[in-house]
Length: 420
Image 1 (cartoon, one colour):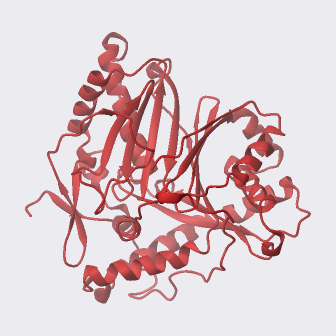
Image 2 (cartoon, one colour):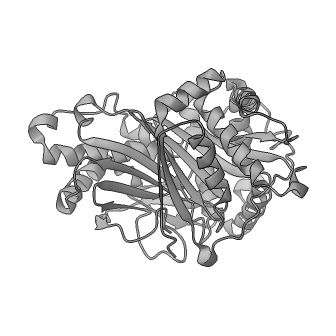
Image 3 (cartoon, helix red, strand yellow):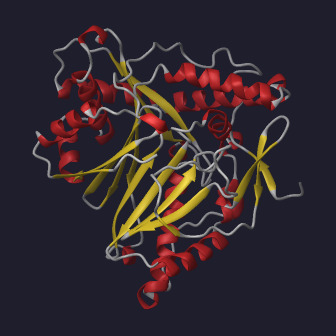
């Protein structure tokens, strides 16, 4: 194989074992400009970007004991968008070589990426560099010398940070891998036919929503999580009120470790609540915030990461053939999915060089799902909720939007057509 290959991180292995037609484990990051996109210029910008950041220029190969990534010279070709967000980019239904693609539509540049390659943080870093290179070609006098600060080295961007920061504090075999979690409520709606997803894009004032969160004494993420929980509860059949509503939240481990990797580096934590029926949104937000703060204490985050990484290092786990490992991982993931109602991923405020800001309108993100997945991204005062839903019913989304409208937020909502 030579020196142009490397092993996958433990999160990538999970995605490789659990992708489906409906949830191909794909994410999308998008940037809208204040002008229409020129395809030829975007192609040149992409060529420049992959020469500077070749981390996504890989092809996933299957070995006997594990998958691995092999670098490739295959050239990505920019096309006008003609598929749903988060399309299939790996597996038997995919005929391409690369596991990402760049598309455009009117004023928007999209990067769709198989999640085994990178996470939201890495994908956004790639997108921002692509947009900068595009704008440099369009406006060389204004942006010719602009760069992103603190550029990481090639080795740092390709590093498996799970392996780098693993500490064998629990011995060779962890005492427990997961705390026992209860089966959570799942939204009672038929799934869309033909493995489809529907997408919603909700724009709201970030300043006003943050002001509301601060009035409750909670974070923006906790406020959003509480509003989603309440919307789910109000859509919930009475007979199922005994079940907990559990929201899963990805945690960017770069906030805990000095990592600049472009690969996956996150864990998930859960916030759960069984409704009594008399909760106010303020009370729910305060409880959500308390649970979340407890879950993301540095010592607990480190312990969780070490436990997962320990499994990868067990000799008998490494030596089990891949055709045996993958069904086990799928069964484990399916069991784990029963304990989660929905996912919220807050990717936070997006920072770009000052010189770019007058050309950039905003950012949007989506992630494929078998249930309900909401991303939150902020640029200037525009907070964008990217909603992906596997359900045909829209009751939860309508209740969430209605609750936010009742707080007198100025809102704009877009919905996609359902595409196979």
